[in-house]
Image 1 (cartoon, rainbow, N blue to C red):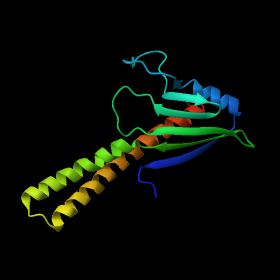
Image 2 (image 1 turned 90 degrees about the vertical axis):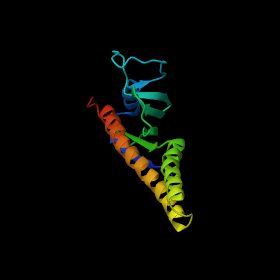
Image 3 (image 1 turned 120 degrees about the vertical axis):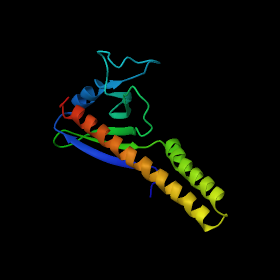
Image 4 (image 1 turned 60 degrees about the vertical axis):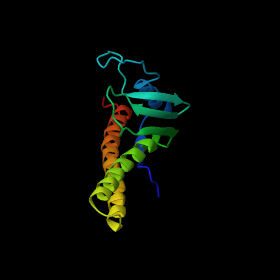
Length: 158
């Protein structure tokens, strides 16, 4: 069982590996400037690196979003074209913070309002669970957006 939200996808494309790599690399920005221009003509969908049929990406956005998954994938040849398999994983530091904040709040609140007993432990565990659920929900929403964007790039819909 994985503690950190993780999703694995595979997309089969009827294009050769070289064409898939080329179309994906057109949408990957290699480096990010300190203050990017969101209205620039050369704005790319993803930020990251590509090497020999494998890639590591993050969606290129111009605001803060703790739920963005890191995308790691590989492009391999198949009988009908190419298979792009990739996994999306959340940030472990962010999930820890999302779990500790409500747990700490539940612990402090129940300690101040009641005598230390079972209720304090229950509130702390409930806070941990609530933080995990909130992070997992946000991650799943963002990974769906990233999957659609990556699928559109690979299937030439954008």
